[in-house]
Length: 358
Ligand SMILES: *Cc1c(COP(=O)(O)O)cnc(C)c1O
Image 1 (cartoon, rainbow, N blue to C red):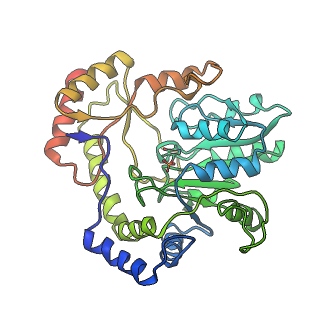
Image 2: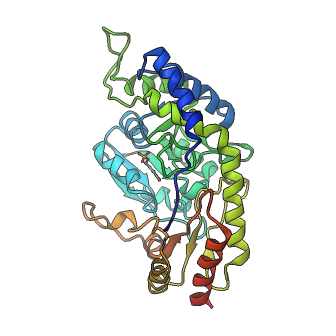
Image 3: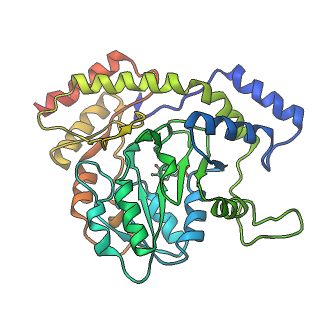
């Protein structure tokens, strides 16, 4: 069976080598040696000025919203994973959707200002599939209206924009190290923030608010990652170049063998060094998507409908209409993309798609 992705497992001996260190230290959590080592190595690999790793990619969104959005209205994209919208609601803020750009699939920055009210406190936008939002324009709007900017950069491990890590943008950027993501620690995630004062707040908030064992800076929650997860990260990190190279081969294969006469690809923003994180394709309509999905499923191939439904259509939300996001969400499919996906399988996938596309 072929799924949309397959978790990368490093050689088990290399994982156990890191575990031996954990046993030697007799230390499992609260920012032990392995967590600190992983943070140091990630900072070098990603070339970021800051990093704080966490137990998943959702808690940093929640903490950033708690500190920066403060229960207000948060302008956000309807085309993302549910965690983006759910975090806003979970923090008792109100999501205000702004439709997406039909080519880039990121929030349409030209529509943001019309959605700002006196209650707006922040913008939470997703660099969807690792494609950067128009960060310069969003920054400009945020400064003009005194809003905070949080980027859900869950898909962005290794993405560079204008020669810099995409994590350097926004008041806070977050990433996910979930097993289905490009780089993973099983479960895990991170904050990136270049404001030392804010980073300090994020730090204590992710550790119950502690200021030493007996005092508290403020309210906090548990966002800490364990040594066991850090061990996985340390074992996966040396393979990142290999992982990206192998994924690039799959992406190149699709690019060279799919029939793009009607099929549409996401447009990468100029200035982006992409990470080959997903291979989304947009069909003519949902009928064509379902026809292709059924044919693929019959061949034991299971792509994923990332992201369906458009988040404004989720049952627990008041539904506003987001025509572009709804159209894209109903007709987009992410094709299988992972290390070890073989050429004979790619050949079958492309043949099935092309048989219906022509
Ligand atoms: C995966 C993902 C998250 C959540 O990350 P977890 O590590 O699973 O908590 C948030 N936002 C987006 C866009 C994601 O794809």
